[in-house]
Image (cartoon, rainbow, N blue to C red; front, side, top):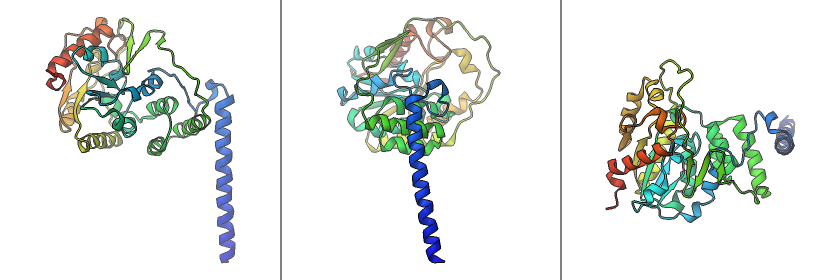
Length: 315
């Protein structure tokens, strides 16, 4: 009886190993040869929206920065390093599209020791605490080198699309299939600016075609857990931080009814500034869509930020 159990377990392990091997080969073949339009559960897009590839590939040029910016597209489209440089601040923007605290954790574990910032400006958009993190994970897997941090993130998200894209991403990294890839600096309306910023040509927001009824942000506990770990990591390394909610269009901001709850929660974590309603921004003049400032809006916001946050004043 004992021998039969051992034989069964051995056969089962071989079957699992063989199945896993076949699955990996299938995913690699699918990624290499199938049209992307058919790849519903595999989304590897090197050079996707947001210029993350260019951003992470210049990190080695930025050591001992004065300010590190973290967060979603509101960060990499909202904090212009050229403006801060005029005030004697060396900055780097490590924002990425739809970046949730789970992805911020990966990026901090990967790059904080290299950048060694004196101060972190952590952009905290309520919507990122309501996301599952899949979109941002796919962006990072596709545009950065994958390592054990990728595996940890994938296990936390436990999503089939993330697993498949990770397998394919590791394959491309191992065999250096992206070694000749160069990302365009200018993509349609976007221009990548050294230091991690993406400038959008001065387009103007034309308003909502239809605005949804007012609703609550539905926050995810796992995002707040990751957020706390990120702040604990900064504290452990004696790195100061401020939490900033960048402005969005007034219509979008007012469409959510629990903004005050989010503000109060953020204040429990440290110095927090919500800049919605604090500047004389006009939706149709200073934004290019409901979420993001155009360059005119960025300049107003960053100048205001420098005046309002004493920690950014080197004088």
